Image (cartoon, rainbow, N blue to C red; front, side, top):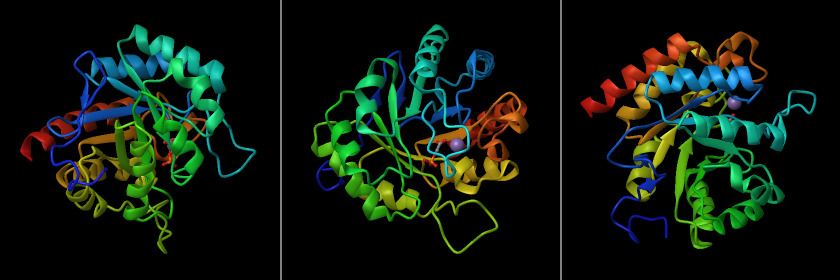
Length: 264
Ligand code: PEP
Ligand code: MN
């Protein structure tokens, strides 16, 4: 069902207020790795609005490699996130980690994110197939393109056709960067599926200084959207600070992405 053979016309998601995701426009989703507090959210929201970015990312349930790392503000934080975002006219993308959270989070989410560690959590995918809100599905840490498409098929076949695929880097033998951003996946996915394809250069390389060029490369490779991390003071972020852009870098990137997209 997610194949171009089944549907030739590209799927474009409509989030209301003139926000469309998919072919025909460049989507930008930016924000902190973790939602930390109201001041942080307000600062990011102002920054996004000033730069014409209409979608904010931020995790309240964080899948951390170590159980001792900051694991997010939970549902309480999500309520604040959603309320403040609405006040700023922003849509939010936030990660859901387990089936029971789908219902709990539903009223406070615009787009459910499935993280790289949950790409093959088939129960979660089944549950998201039954909701009427979009899902941003990340590629698994060691997942093939085919496996990503199969995961999308779980959601789609359950009745939810609003899916965004996101390349976020895979695990390879390379240790110089956190992950290896597989830009090959972009044209291959665009050829195979009618779904929108995003690139996440932040998790893709894990190094702040190289996020921007990879975002631009992702756009030239055919991505419909870029998702990246930005925060007021990246050095003090509760998670992923090393790959998070400050607002100055973020504003420059937004401008560069728009120029790059126009060249395509
Ligand atoms: C995130 O977006 O902050 C995140 C945890 O991403 P991933 O699942 O790709 O590691
Ligand atoms: Mn992160």
